[in-house]
Length: 211
Length: 391
Image (cartoon, rainbow over all chains, first blue to last red; front, side, top):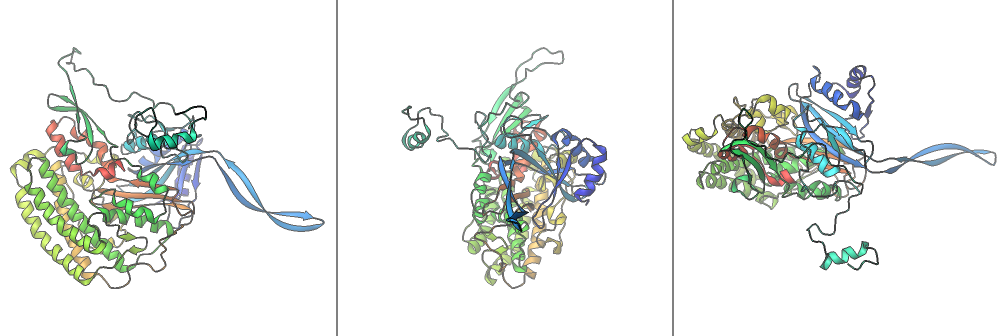
């Protein structure tokens, strides 16, 4: 089985414009993953599936991950001169990281019995630009799983043959697996809150509205 | 919450008008909703079926009736607290669910498993496979109209396995038995001799079961050539488990990954030729016979020793930041868990790859062109459990 570096070195000349990164994984037995930009994801996935040395014909697992806006803190050592004496001071650097949604594909080969190669795709943001290419045209097994990622995370897969909600009902609003999802007080369709739901509702109604 | 635009493409709901070759309308298609309370759907599962006479022209599975967002629950509780929840995924096979989850956490946290615990895990997993396949065949015969008798025979044998589970874990179905770095408690020598007795007698039961079913005229007529799944489609659609091997693909994770100590056992992987419903039935019978061989070897060779890694920390487990995907060959197919740790006591992401959910992808492809009564048989041969499909 080739390492992610070897795959990247063979893939990069074929897609000169693509941005391919290898993401580290600190877990001792874990696999590192290939991050490909959405515009070239379908071509890269096609290479992974059809290449004679890889033959990743089996897309085992498709997963969504939500990464909300965050501030990443890194500690940096700096030399500061205080009253003529040079001192080493530890400073915390804060870099804001805009949020995004991530979709993971765990690819194996049934023919050559190796794997996995982990393919990661990232959306531009979490709000209005959550489009990613669908890999269902390459692996039929992604069909229901991409529908699930759409349903629970709100990633819109372009080129998916039948993108509908799968686990939640069709009229459902929102995407419950997102980290900032707030469950409604009552899932039942009933416009007026009552009993314990009324107490919950009072907490976030504007004060002038008497529910 | 920011608004998300509607998905592209029209929902695939409308019924097309029935036309002849010249495009003129003739007659009507009939759309029926099969389920969610139809007894053949093995739970609350619905199929939107469009029929031309009795022939299926479109079939869309609809599920989610048992959805409880298992993955979200897993993100909000510590690692160990998810273990009893995994029992409720595929409630026939809680032991293999436990194993898959324990295996993934062990991979994530770098824990070792003592020798005796590995043997106990194999014994539990193979007993689970025996009872799952036996029950499935019972249900399957019931779906074809053999009301009662085969299922009662199957459940009689399943009871014996459940009694064994109960005496070691305290629960018949929701075993919650495995832990990260071993199993919760040791088995006694009496338990092992009981398990050996059951294993040795199981072949005889299978002979009897097969004598009733395998050459049965009705079963042959209802299953042969029905619901054929081609090798190429099976691989592309990520079908796993007995379904995949019935289509002739030699892919068994016990052989491919050799997780646990499966590399030490001598067993064969039965393969089908036609990929039809009969092959799927036969593969399960043959797999049970191989499971008996594994069980006999494991019960013979089991060493003494501890059953938990003394260094393993169960409560307050905080794996280093990282991610891991672990998978086992559950009776229904590849059961995988994917975990991301951010160094906190709860996983950042907890994902289950349920085999029966993904095996349903090609239900429509298998049913098209068959009669409505065959969809019941085809669905029965997929072997689904809605606790796992809906999560």
